[in-house]
Amino acid sequence: MFSRGKQGQALVLLALSLVGLLAMAGLGIDGGRLFAAKRRAQNAADAAARAAALVIAQQRDGVSASDIQQAKQAAIRRAADNDFTLTANDITITQKDGMYYVDVTVKTNIIGTFINVVRKTPIPVEASAQVKVTPQREIAYGYALAATNEHACNAINIHLGHGGWLNVEGGIFSNTDATASSGRGGGSHGACVALFAKGHPGSAVTADYIHTVADGERSYFIGGHGGGGISITPLPEGGYPHMILPQLPTPVCAQEGRYENGHYWPGRYPRGIHVNRNAVFEPGIYCLDGDLQISGSDHAGGEHEGSHDTHAGPVEVTGQGVFFYLHSGSVKIHHAEVNLQAPLKGSSQAVDAAGNRWGGMLFYLPPENPGYVKITGKGAIVLRGTIYAPGPVSRYHGGHARCMIGGHEGVSPDDSSYPSDDDPDTKGILQIICDTVRIHGHSQITLRYDSTYFFGIPVLDVTK
View 1 (cartoon, helix red, strand yellow):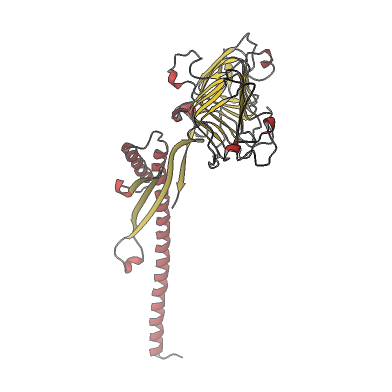
View 2: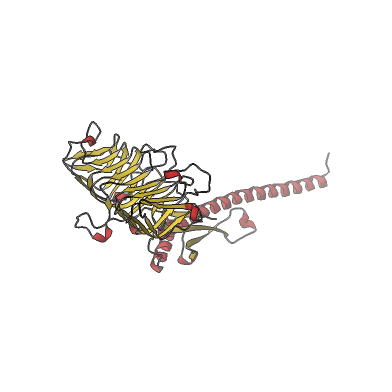
């Protein structure tokens, strides 16, 4: 048996142990609360930084002081949505080498429960986030014509007849590393180069600049017929890095499309759209499983959805603020007068049912669609926006290239051949980005680069 003195010592030790256990439990509870508060603050900081970065990303003509203030206000509002208070001093936005860095710091305090025994003041909690952002840029920034295939022979193939010309007010880019010394099987006339150009006397290709991944004089071929040949100004410059293509979401159309009295309405078209008479496409997004075919030829009609009686001579087709997504099928425009213009950025017609924004996109064929874009024949054609048809697939149903423009009768996607009441400065502004490109025939083509009217995506990267 214990003596009374020893029993007293045991009670003291037991009491001290209970105090220690209670302190440990209290610290565990307060530690859990501190961790939860830290996580909430971090989530709020991340969300606020993204909100500010999104404002920066949407700017296309530079970022002004007013844009910076709007970005900070967006961060403050987003923090308030998460029950945190920010001031402008908690947000810094800096610029370096074309990138913008948005830093946000969220501060708060928690009142401890058991830790108040040793600490009478609130516990500070702080979290920070940084988002690196690039304002919206086009997929092929600065280029009105680009072939995206990394290894194809003659990724850009130009073959022009008498009087044919390609005038690019902007740049041309070939993403392939093919050269005449790369040992690959040749394309046209045995050549295997990044840019192949051949034509009759008087034919010409002009651009502000022509860039290729493949380097050296063996990266391009220039040839001709008879006593002369095609001219290219300036000559291609090689050694550029490969273009990095973004992963785009799948456009979503919620409703079924419909046709009524010569008008097409946006929505889903499970069997494509075949037009062979005068028609108007109403503004919006068109989701097709099947061809978009516009033609004045008799063979354009038939049993396909959206097909109607044939129309003698070239048909006239217009559409302002339209975007065509082809999950399957091809774009075929032949012997028609066409004026199709993509939705402007920021317009309601550019937003699909999932909230994705497609402003500036005119035609989009995803990589898994083996179709093609082919614009040929006689007819005045005005297209505005971005044609985006990346690869790779094993072989396109059209044979020669992913995108083909031209014909012996001529095709003119320029700003002068189509009568319209619209501002002429907004017509013929076209960006072609395809896996491979073929320009042929007696075509007279002008491509005008203007980023205001092209599809662009912001780049946001949470760095901490």
